[in-house]
Amino acid sequence: MKKWLDLNAFLGVPATAWLSAAIAVVASYFLLSMLLRFVTGRIESLAERTSTKLDDMIVEVLKSTRSATILISALLFGAGFLGLNDRWETRVNHVWFLVLGIQVAIWINRGVTVWTAGRLTAQGAFAHNPVITTMLSWMLRGLLWSVLLLAVLANMGVNITAFVASLGVGGVAVALAVQSILSDLFASLAIGLDKPFEIGDFIVFGEIAGSIEHIGLKTTRIRSLSGEEIVCSNTELLKNTIHNYKRMTERRIVFGFGVTYDATPDQLRAIPDKVRQAVEDAGDTRFDRAHFKQFGGSSLDFEVVYYVTDPAFNLYMDIQQKINLALMTEFSDAGVEFAFPTHTLHVASAPEEPLRPIRQSSAQRAALQN
Image (cartoon, rainbow, N blue to C red):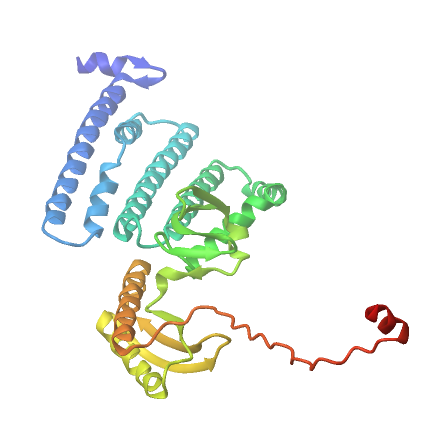
């Protein structure tokens, strides 16, 4: 058998070399597969005992190893036993570089995917703005595959200098063509970096008021108070002055009321204390001031300022209702009446004139006598 193998050749390579290469391919394939499973299993068992995310990411990265990569690597390893000439040896080296480069890129791409998913899961659905995480993921993937492409071309002897210059010119042309899209893209990046608002925040700008539902690379989606979804361009959104009510630590409330002019000075002096008591009894409040502000057209006007320690709007409305009802009760017990717009009309009558004697002519008197 050995003599037959030594005497026969295929494609100019002795059968003995082909047999050695086949044995090397099979052995290396099973060896690499077993080594991958062993390392992955060991790291996976270690990851179950730790709370860090790095070992979990390594496990996911190793699991992304392609079976085709192992098979091609085994074939290339076996090709080394064929005694190829320099030309074929160079081609095999190029294929080695391509296979390993693609597999490394797959590992890094999987690592970026796991990192992105972990970041978005940790942030939660309504916690933070996911734009930066998403954009970094896209940028890392784009950079990864671009570097791989240029490295493969350079390894194969292609002059990448002119290629990169052509890409630069083409990039400028594309940028001019999609200027509006790039404007929204950079506006999205600005939102992610500066964080004027995040998902779940209630904002008001212009005539629009609603909660942020989604921040995309081009548009932001807002759920309005009436229920419809408003889609706004990121660029147009940042051009407006944005009021973010979600970030209020407390709510400052100013309200006023008026009492009738028949209230006595003693009753007016007691009103600020009654207001203070009503505000403090409402709960979740901090009283600031209550003053007899001015003499109104039909009322004696008071102004009250207090703070709600929780920014929730419904809580504020509940507190204001309690204060209003408490003031109505207190004023009713004290005999103080709330004023409402009135107008008093004073009518002055004209003075009565004394009766004057009527002068008659001689002809009129003669007629009356007859």
